[in-house]
Image (cartoon, rainbow, N blue to C red; front, side, top):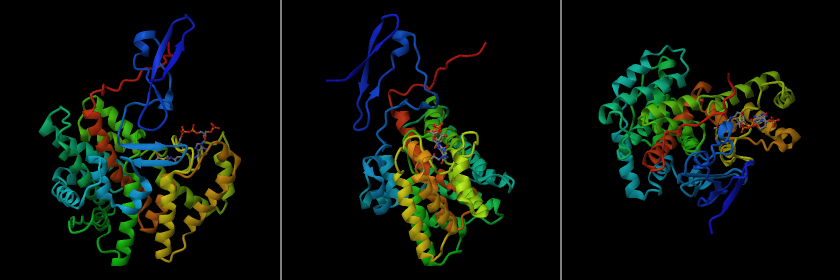
Amino acid sequence: MDKKALLELSNGLKIELPILNGTVGPGVLNIKDLYRTTGLFTYDPGFVSTASCSSAITFIDGDEGVLKYRGHSIADLAENNNFTAVIYLLLHGELPNLEQHKKFLLKIEKLSKVPEQVVNVIKAFPKTAHPMSILITCFASLSALYHERHGNNVNSEDLDFGISAIAQVPAIVAMIYRHINDQEFINANNELSYSENFLRMMFGDAFDNAKSALFAKALDKIFTLHADHEQNASTAAVRLVGSAGSSLFASLSAGVATLWGPTHGGANEAVINMLKEIEQSGDIDKFIEKAKDDKDPFKLMGFGHRVYKNYDPRARILKNACNEVLGKLEQSSELLKIAKGLEKIALKDEYFVTRKLYPNVDFYSGIIMNAIDIPSNMFTPIFALARTTGWVTQWYEMANDKETKINRPRQLYVGK
Ligand code: ACO
């Protein structure tokens, strides 16, 4: 029998609210008709207790530290599949067989050419621009091409547009990097895998074969771990913009803008800057104390998560990947030592323990990218590159969902 919750108001009115059950996860109180039946809204700043949609893409159990894409555990995907198979899985719901994967790679290749208009947008930026500001503009610029084909109509059938975003974003991010570093662009090499190709478009032939293979494997893992994360802030932004009927690329541009913030994807850049500051000061304890001081706005970057109240499974995989990359490079990294030291102290400290603050995905990813010599201002664009797959998948799900309405929250008015 379906469960219900009973709401009794002070005026004696009683209403039953249905409790919806997903495939797994907690029950969800359906308040869709609350305003119509009672004249009351709900108040939930930051959407701490609010599900904004139903979705069949990604599942997180934050208490148990579980993350699954389309029912596949993140550890299995990161260790036993490559990123293009994961893209296919997210978009189509199943991992591809060999034939499907081959065809999909050809499609990515076919759709990967970055239009001249976008190349010119990148070149128009000053070299001092933050790469995320350029990336926002590149997606906004691509919306003009979508508009030419579909006008202002959301076309939820035309998946090729979504795949073209995923296919073009590595070249766009690599071009942004080379532009701000005053280097010539490097053409794609479609003989290479998605991650190898990206590494080559960024750095050309800077690495020998062994290093290229090691770094491409690590990046592939980073891409897989960042590909989707249910209704996080940037994905919610993509869905919100799309819910108004705006095009895929206009929505993606909002996703990149949201990801840039340091409490979201911008944390990976902030973590490495923080670790470098700690290295310079040589005083981990001072930073722990600052993070605990409620009068100090400083937070331990890469720690804490709205959903995970347990170790973020992505951080665990990346910590191992850090050890592997640095081990194979025979490098000892002071930053990795500091990160592990910080984690050790925080995981024993009452402040962090009682608030269930654990390392998140951004805590270790930057150390790997640092070992590849990727500058820290490129960390968030690389996150955006990977998350483009999630945004695209979620946008199509939103556009095909008959329950989608324009996302229009209400407010508690406290003004004059
Ligand atoms: N360092 C110190 N204290 C923290 C931290 C932190 N990193 N994170 C949370 N807290 C404290 C808060 O001050 C609060 O304390 P209080 O109860 O005494 O007021 C308590 O823990 C609960 O934190 P909230 O801010 O309510 O948690 P929320 O879910 O709103 O925020 C967030 C989650 C934004 C991730 C937060 O933990 C944070 O800012 N972390 C650092 C930035 C970061 O790493 N962001 C990346 C997140 S992963 C991603 O988006 C890819």
